[in-house]
Image 1: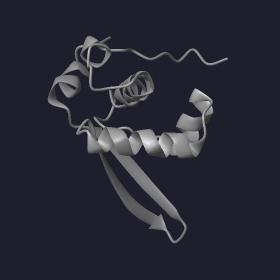
Image 2: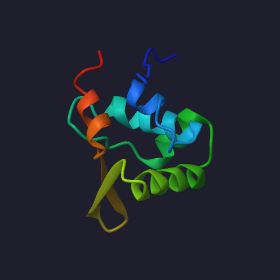
Image 3: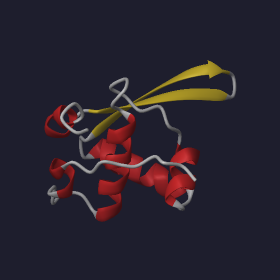
Length: 101
């Protein structure tokens, strides 16, 4: 069993523009962004942790991007492999990365 946990900043909890799963996924991205200011987890990882399909993760990553909470940057590292960085770009949430324990 993993001792990993998520922090859910009040800026995410109280955001009325987000549905519950968007809040959870954004909190997960937020938690993984603390060390490097970006998250590099792939959709397979998120799907496994949250017990949903990769298609569901793709949908919600796209929605968070469209709503202006995150920005994804991808680069090809091999012919069949792409590495993605997810940045939190919502200013209130981004500043909370360094404020939460």
